[in-house]
Image 1 (cartoon, rainbow, N blue to C red):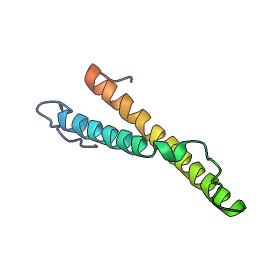
Image 2: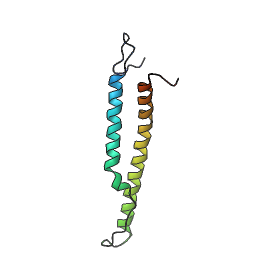
Image 3: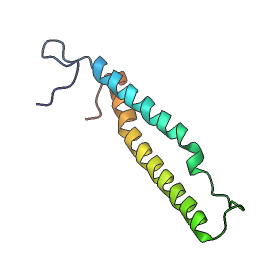
Image 4: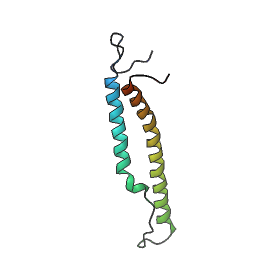
Length: 93
């Protein structure tokens, strides 16, 4: 049996502690996403730097930031679903 925070045999588990942890994680992921917003913008050519390496470095950094955003979005989906089930008082199963 998996034990969740706030779950006891007597009260059936209110999920308040679990819900609070989910909300905190959701806000953490949203904050990370917001702070990395500029990293995902289109790469502009910096005229002060000559050659392909600086541009390639910028494109690589942009691709890594976009990948991180996709992973954060993937992590947010189950959190939203869990919060909806907790707040709705039911389960989809």
